[in-house]
Length: 80
Image 1 (tube, rainbow, N blue to C red):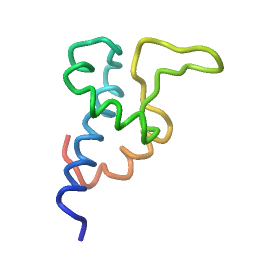
Image 2 (image 1 turned 90 degrees about the vertical axis):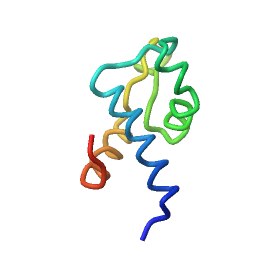
Image 3 (image 1 turned 90 degrees about the horizontal axis):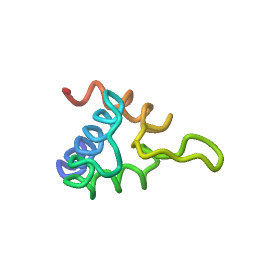
C-alpha cells in the first residue's frame, strides 16, 4: 500500500500536468505563480517543460512524453 502523503503528491503533480495538457499554462500566469512549487516539482521530475526543441523555448508549460506517460500510469488511480 502506498504512503498517503506520496499518493497526495502524485495527485498534485498529476493535476498540474493535466492542466497543461488540457490548456497550456503560460509561465507567468496566475496559475503558474500560485502553484509555482508544483510546477517546479513537475518540471524537476521531467513531467513539464518549456522547451520546444534545441535552443527553442516557449512561455508555455507543456507536458513532456514522460509527463503524459505519468498521467497514463495513474489515470486509473486518480479521478480528474
